[in-house]
Amino acid sequence: MKSVLIAIGIALLSLSLISINAHITFTRTLTQKPFTISIPSTAVGVITISSNSSNITVYITISHNGRISIEKLPYSTDLSPGKWVIEGYKQIQSVIVKKIINETESLKCGNITTQKVINQSVKEISGTVTSPVYVKITILKVNPLAHTLEVKLIGLLMIFSGIILWILEKIK
Image 1 (cartoon, rainbow, N blue to C red):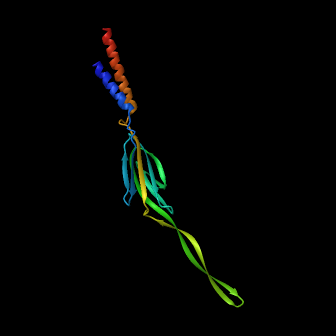
Image 2: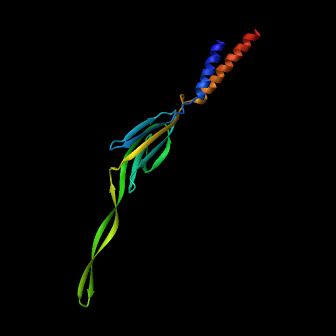
Image 3: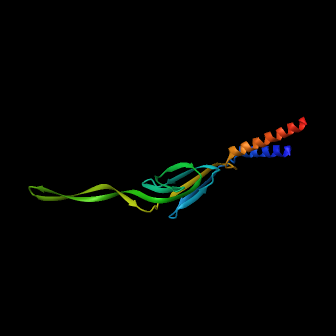
């Protein structure tokens, strides 16, 4: 009995001390449908959302465990456990429009009309996101147990119980 307690205690203690440190990365292109992912409480990672268009500003909505926020790209944050839903919100594109203005000048000999071309920057706001948006998720490590402190304490308690039983057996 005492050796079983010590063995299980050592197994629990060693299980609580290990973690899987292999980096797992995947990138997904955001489409018209929302991107949904569930992160377990044992995972530690980072989410990065970006767009490759330089003249377009993209906004997305992020829903995490019922809390909704609107974020401007690029966006990066630590992954926390729970359900993540990411979808496009709107995009703003700056377009340079050439505008022709007629100006009439009155002179002694008559009126002269001249045309001037003016470059004007206009922002087009779209309710749908059409430029590519990339969602990159990097999992840095995964712990095999959710509550490592409790498992460590139980493992140590089992080891000490086995040692106490062994000492009591030696005394008798």
